[in-house]
Image (cartoon, rainbow, N blue to C red):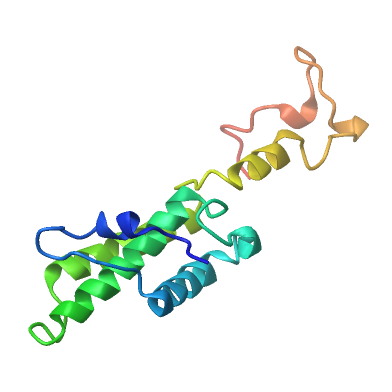
Amino acid sequence: MAHVTLDEIQQWLAPTKFGLNAIDVELEATAVSFIFGRLEDRFDVSGWTNETTTPDLVRKTVALYIAIMEYERSIAEDYPSGDSYSKRLWTRMETLIEGILADEIHIGQDQDETLSALESPAFYPTDAQDEWIPGELDERRKSSIGMVF
């Protein structure tokens, strides 16, 4: 089943210069495998089975991959090593994936689970010897500035 729409792919390509009529199903499967493969260590991608279940930002990344591949196919004879536009798009896609993996860019879906896990502490201080009442003088908490060791 399709993870992206034709419009999502076309948004990366100038319609007056490069128009797509249909989505290449095999290329979309490759794009999904590539993008999901990069993200599966951080996210549970098993539920991302179609347009409605795949997070919006992930769909845009898959669409970007397909757009790059379609564009490079069309210019391969004229520019065997690619051109600057496709290279810029590839860099943008890699930056997007790295940002998602580094948790600098949130895809929305799994962020709530991460935030709820952070709401409760992993441990509670229970050691009575570490309790300190403000204002009490404690030998362990004296300043050591100026001391010679």
